[in-house]
Every structure is written in structure tokens, then in C-alpha cells.
Amino acid sequence: MSARDRAWLQTFIIVIVVSAVLGAPSDARAQRTSRASPRFQPEARADFIGGRAATAHVGAGVSVPASTYVRLGMVAAAGQAWSDGEVGFAGRVDGLVRFVVDPLREFRWAPYASGGLSAIYDRTEDWRAVLVGVLGIEGPAARGVVPAVEVGFGGGVRVGVAIRRAMTGRR
Image 1 (cartoon, rainbow, N blue to C red):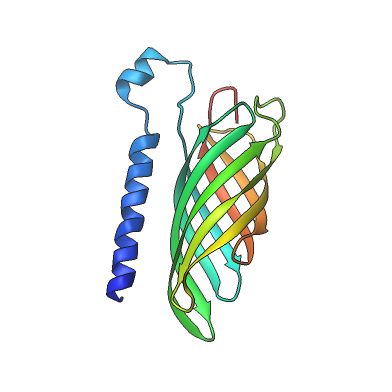
Image 2 (image 1 turned 120 degrees about the vertical axis):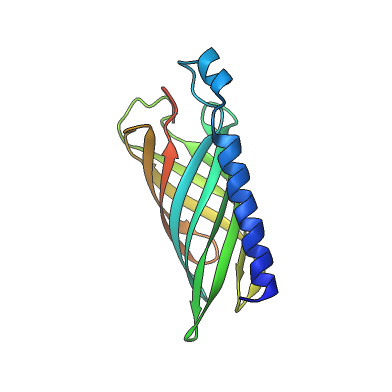
């Protein structure tokens, strides 16, 4: 692994740790607002991006409600890229806005649309910025998590699955 790849991996690990710390409720806040949902909604995800270099990423992110229907989020992910028979390190950081069609969880399944910017890295193309557009569907909450499936574009065709922390009474 090159020095550049190690530096990127260290940055990725820092982002994951910060996301986990910010997304975890404190004991004091949990006691004060036992019925209220946490403000941060952490997620874990796996994605495939079929672009010039096909990539597979696993990552973590966090989103926060900006309004009843809108969530602002960040995702950091890392994995491998395959291009011209070569395999190398790949990663990305996404800044996304998610529009939720059913914010109050009135239906078991609910569609959403998401868009934003992504900084993508792979050994064949180095860093580049791309626009991201995604359509997804969230499933019913079970055991404190909500599953989601997505398809869209951003550096190529994107297909992903995510598990987000369930928020009481909302998506």
C-alpha cells in the first residue's frame, strides 16, 4: 500500500470514528428524552459503482433532519476498484440531501430521492468530484434499524444497500 493510500485510509478511519461518536446518544440525553428520537441517524452501507473503474465500497455515514421531509448526510466509504485487470484501493466521501416521501412513517415501505456531491478516489483516476443522484426505498423498522435499497448515478451506475438507525415516529 502506497503512502497516499495509507493517508487516505487513516482519514477514512477518522471519519468513521467521528460519525460513530456523534451518532451515539449520550446516557444523559437518553435519560432526559426517553421517548424522543436521537438527532443524528448513523448508517452502515455497501455499494457497487460501475464506472470506468468498477468499485465496491463499504462505509458509514450520518444524517440529520433539516426539516420534516429533508435529511442532510455525509457518507465515507472504502473498498476496491477493478480496471484493466488491475485491482487497487478505492474510496469516496459523499455529501447528500435526502428527500423523504413518508417522513412520519405512515407506510411500511417508503421511497426517497437523494442527491449531492461525491469525491471519489481510485488508483487509476486519482481524486475526482462527481454529481450523485439516487432513488431509494426504506423498509419497516425492526430491532432499531431501517433497511434501504438504492439505485442511481455518481461516478457510474450505483447500487447500494444501507441500514440506518430507526427514529421513533419518523424516517
